[in-house]
Length: 165
Image (cartoon, rainbow, N blue to C red; front, side):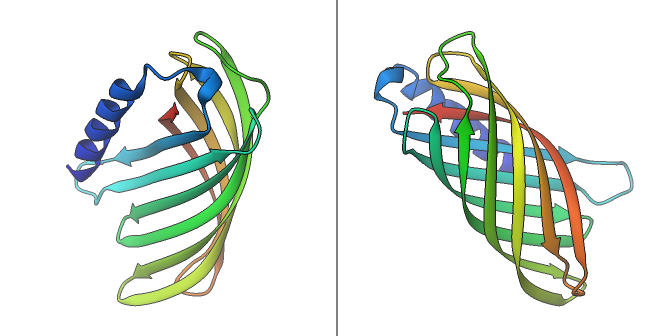
């Protein structure tokens, strides 16, 4: 329910700010995630929120906050990374991007808590619905340390929205 409220708020903000000019963009706000409910099983969800500052018209430095709830395993991470758009985009364009990130991660499972570092490499495409609003499809390869000390690699596919302002 909280994910739906956050998504509704973000869509409202995107609609209000969609009149900005693409040439004036200096920042971006992104939200993406996944939610899965299987009958008789706990939910699986991941939500990522990011705020970026353009260094050039194609390169962005990004701070992000992520939450994960995976069948009783919960984690929250805060990170720093970068994203590179392979070209400038305008309404109707499909623009590929690639990124990297590092995050501090706090996780818990079965009463056990741990802190670790998370690394990721990601990429995808942004479809410019307007000159400043994109629909993004992303694949992310993450390396994380589990509460039991083991290392795991996760591949996550997500869809989200980005507003450039």
